[in-house]
Amino acid sequence: MAEPPQFRFVQFEFPWAIGPPDGRYVVREHPEAAPAHVLVVRTLGAPQRHRLRRRRARAAAPEPPPAPVSTSRVTVIGAQPFAGAGQAQAWLEDGDLRELARHAVTVVNRAIAAHRAATHDPLARDVTPDQAMVTRAGYGDGDEVADGRWREARQLDQEPARETRRSAVLRPGERLAALLGAREQTLACEEPSLAARAALDGGRMRSAAILTEAALRAAVAELGSGDSHSADMSRRVAELAELHTTVARVAETALLTEPDESGRAAVRKGLERLEAALRARAASGPWR
Image (cartoon, rainbow, N blue to C red; front, side, top):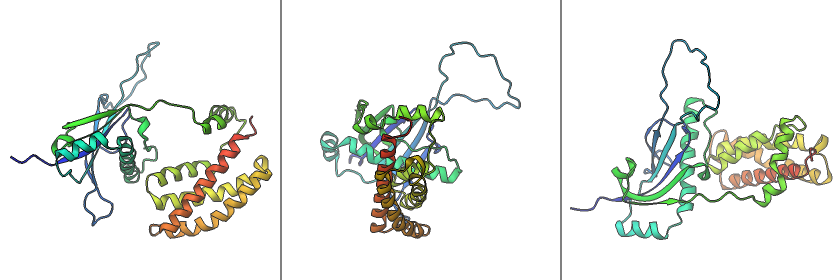
């Protein structure tokens, strides 16, 4: 009897319900393309909820135990099988499993973005590999991996958190305290710039172009005035204004179609330079 084909997979477990309902989803790059991945979403340990006509407040005991939470198990399965078990084993032994996990999480985020659009739920958030409680990579036949089983797999260790040079310079805790204490205000350009970064990293180029244009337009107005004004910031704002002109044309095109390679490059550069300007402002913020 011939051995069934073996498929690679990456499996994440997140300590919350990520959004898309439980099920199997076929992921394609475009309608005529062959399937690229199969995404399997399962909810584990969901707390029971009773539907009541009327909810009443109840007395709460001091020092309560943690409330039970839902856990999402998300499996990203490659649609193309290995040539044989030997190739699958060699891949598991020698492949860059962390890079595979980084790619797999973009597939998960594509599903979350689709869920946001389908449900009009703005609070369904993208995920990152380091947010997973457990990450596994391995292979098995199609039915095995779709049902949460496998032939062989590895569990990836969590990388220890470390302070980067960037976070040491920015000291985000100081700005957080300043924002909560009303000594500092968030800029209007910051939220769209963060959303643009998520869209760009997730391959959603049309959204990235439109969000980057909005963020640049706001940044040119905000960073060029008031306490943000300095010789260094003036140079940065002039650069952002020039980049905005190009990105605005790309965003106009993105209203109807995907940007071409030069357009994608312009969006990437515009967003990167905006992020650099925001870091420079944070590193010398007025709350220091």
